[in-house]
Each structure stands twice: as C-alpha cells, then as structure tokens.
Image (cartoon, rainbow, N blue to C red; front, side):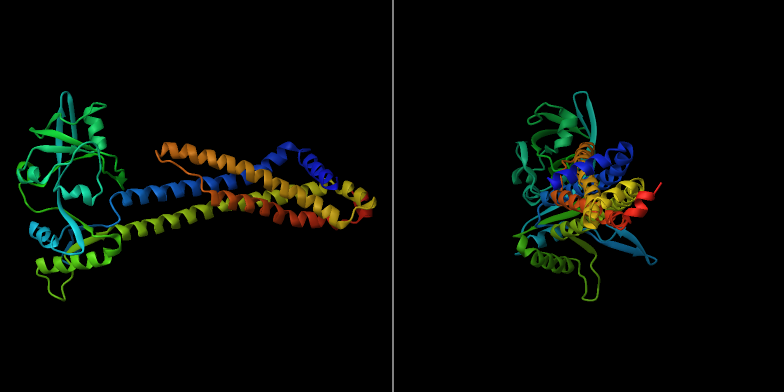
Length: 403
C-alpha cells in the first residue's frame, strides 16, 4: 500500500503542472528517440552496404589499371598501363582462381518502339555471371558459342529492362543499340547500387560483340576474377599480383602498375567505417539525453522549492529523510521511465518513415532500444539525487516557516 501511495503521490505531483512536466519529458523523448532512430538507420545502412558488396560475391577480386605520374603528379587510378587480353589468358592459368572475365564498358542509345533510352553497355564473357553472382529473373545468359561468334544478344539489368519495356517481358524482343539490332535473351535480378553507380541500369553483351561493334579495341578496362573459395582469397590475390607483374615485365624493385580490389577487404573496411559513423551519431544523439537530465534536475529543484511547506509538514508528522528522498527519486525516475517509453516509440516511427524515404528497409536496433531506455531511467534517477537530497535535509521547523 505504501508503494502504491508513493506512486500515486508522484504521479499527482508531476501532473499538478502538466505543461512543465511535458516540457521536461520532451528532452528525454527527443534524446531517446534520436538514439533509437539514428542507430536503427545506421544499422540499416551498414546492412545495405554489406548486402550490396556480398551480392558481388565475397570471393571476387577486381583488377584495374594502376596510376601513372607526370612531373611527379599522380594522374589518378586507371591512368597507368592498360590491361590486355594476355593478362586474362595468364590469369586463367592460376590455380587459386576459379574463373576470370575481362570487362569493357561503353554507353549506348537504346531504341525500342517509341522508347529512346541511354544506358551503360558492358561487354564480358559468360564467366562474368558466375563471378559476380548475377542471377536471371527471366531468360538466360549468353554462352560461349555466342561469345565466339560475336552474336548480337543482350542481357538487361532490372532498371534498364523496366525503363525500356515497362511491365512487358523483354525476353525475345529486338532492340536497337546505337543503330545495331540486338535480341534480348535475358533479364537480371536486382543487384542494387554501389556508391553512385546503379548496377541494374546496364546491358551486358558478349565481349567480342562490344569489341567489334562499339569500341574497336581488345583491351579490357577491368578484369574480374573469383577465388576458388573465400578461404583462399589471400592466395588468389598473391597469385594475381605475381602473374600481373610477370605479364607486365616488372622488375623486383618496380611498383605495381595495376590495382587489385578484394571484395572481402572492401566489405570489412566499409563495415568498419559505417560502425564508426554509427557510434558517432549515437554519441551526438546521447547529448540530448544529458540535456533531458538537466531538465529533470531543474523541474525537481523548482518542485522542492514550491513544496517546502509540504515537506516540512510531512517531516513534522514523522516522515523520515529516506521517505522524502525516495519520494523525489521516484518522481525523477518516473519522468525518465515515461520519457524513455515515449522516446522509443517516437524514434521507432521516425526510423521507419526515414527508411521509406531512403528506399531502405529499417530494422529497429533492439540493443539501442534497451540501452537508451535503461540510460533514460538511470539519468532520471541520477539527476534527481541532488534535488531529493536537498528536500530530505530540510528542517521541519524552517520548512513550515517558508513563505
């Protein structure tokens, strides 16, 4: 009964001044809500980046030209000696690699009926589909025979297919790319984006076809390779480096004129960066919790001043220091509890709404929910200690005389 009476008294005391209490709660609500929303959005972003990189395959390596220097000034990545098909042939002999595929890129104006659409054109060999883990939503990938014959066949990315054909099945249709007819033989499942690049907004055709019809050069702009397994990534990368140095005739003292990108390393680095940013955002949002705690201390100090005569009367009737201390701590903890619950609800809704605008499914980070809730209650209690101690130390005689 005493506990129920204490809770009732705490609730009645807080809602004697509802506007003041709501404003105090607002600091805790904003603080908890910010932590929950930002941590959940950060987790969703991390998972999105990880899934996009993993979608390319965790055992994928990319070989691209290195950088050259002119008058001591770096010309940037890709400015070094170009890759060649001889590099591809040599890499295909490496035992740690399961597949190797050259890639050339271009752009094309695609025409179908009244639709006129510009998109990226990528030329590669059939191995590119297994290396990059590309799966079909309709139709099939092109094969070795079509590659050898430089056939005019095309596989569309999901975005390219939607923009050209809408809801019509593109398989079997004929399109014009830069004035040349191509038969659509397949459509890819969604791959997602990598940075500013939309991997779905592309058309993949045989490497020989792109070379003969568009670029006129045999040199690949990039080489994709896949390791036999994710456990052999280090061995595969070492073999690629050794082979590329041999084909480029580099001496022992010469630096690499190519760049090898390891998807597993990239994934680990991106997750580390995202985790750091997530912790930073969480730390910034936690400042709001501190501000909310200061608000709780402020309202309780005002409450102690306003209720000085009440405190004196209670102590005169036999209330102990512990009873008065507990009463005010209960009130401050109650503010932290209500603020925590309301903040979690607000933060969860904000995360879901922002996730929809970002076109990214947001899953509430439960660890941040529990942590922010516990911290909000703890802050309520901690910042309520000083006002509660001040109230408990009041002299009954002086308190009753207070005007």
